[in-house]
Image (cartoon, rainbow, N blue to C red; front, side):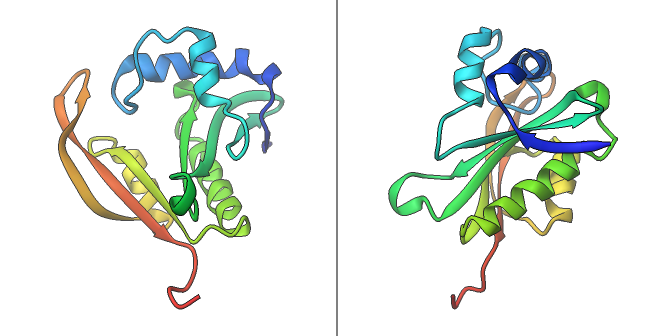
Length: 167
């Protein structure tokens, strides 16, 4: 059974293998390749106001998400998040469960909206997932991501309002 819970430092050795695989593939994240475990952990397990969760199936970590304010100060009413699912477990609904969890967290935490700043336009699965949850592409920065296989491709900015605009 899939469960989502707060991540802790003991989870890192289970997150890092798929984190490094995904970042080193250079297809979906603008992260430096070959990050050490320590460098990656400092990025992924940030302290408050950030929050990191793991998705587990039968106690095995199969995905993770980090979430928090998109910007500090006057931009902190808009949330953002990043997601990684073990590539060997994709297609099992893990990404959707993490995405729903994050949207509900942002809504219940009082954020006005969610914004994803850098969804690689060729990451069709992610784009479909966010659109399924109501996110809209509000802009695309051309050639902003250097895909390891396709070369320069665009990055979408995706947005989901969480409150009525008059609130």
